Image (cartoon, rainbow, N blue to C red):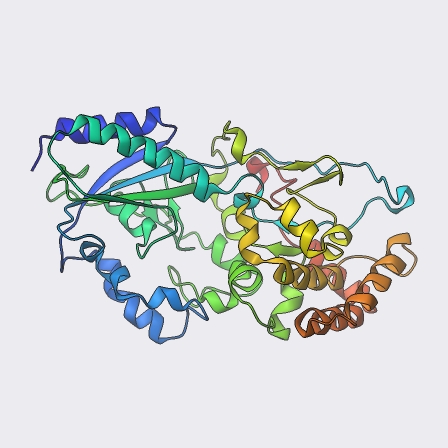
Length: 394
């Protein structure tokens, strides 16, 4: 094993590269972290839904990621952006204020975090190759390989796994992007031999579980992805189950509710990284922090590609985002007397005739839902709003 000074040097260089946290966890073929032993049961229950890539057996054995691997270098960067108030400008329909707006998860407000973190990881790797003269192998992952980063982060000393399954750090909260470098370097672990990982400080709190509108947590620390709004709006390619559409409210891409209500995020510091700030589309007068639903639902494939270029939101794909926007319009608080109601109904009527059967079916559902707007408004309005609410009052 290499002296501990090398681990300290790597963590120092990681912070210099722009990461907020860094730690090293040991790994060897056939060895695994305790949480990964429960992965087969979680998969057998069907909780992964259609995310078939989660069945890759290498996820349960970090040592199998790279021949001769000895260490996992885990990094984290804070993406907690300040509360954002949507623009009040209404260039096309000035009488329609306020327009119903979509909820997009904070992680997708700015540039694609995969690319941002990958660049920083490659910079760190380049420094490591200059530091260590002996040949070594290494691979970097940012949600791109068969590794469960948050579990590795726990054993690298970065935090604990909360009841909402997110990694929580006592100083930074849970607004963290994670990256991993698996390497053959025998680095000294950040946690000394015999030292436990950071303690679970969730206590008796169940705010994240209680706040989930789709009841996606069958038990503390267990997520049924099939009911999670993030899964429904991003990973699920087909029809969204009807019983889960109304609880989705205005969410069109991801969901932050279980993090918004977490007490550990009340004092989480804001990030100053420009790439994570909400993207402003000047020509469309839209912000990805709170875009107008009418604009999202009317996007063409070309419009979508332009607006979400180099954005993590592109994973949802155009048809998925329009599908989600239809649901959110159906859940909106628009009433027949509102000027925007007629436009939304006209837009949904047009989408109901779409050549894409997925979009057409969800638009028809939304049209029917819109006619019951008082009931729909309850689902739309009674959801914690991360774009407006101060974290001190969550």
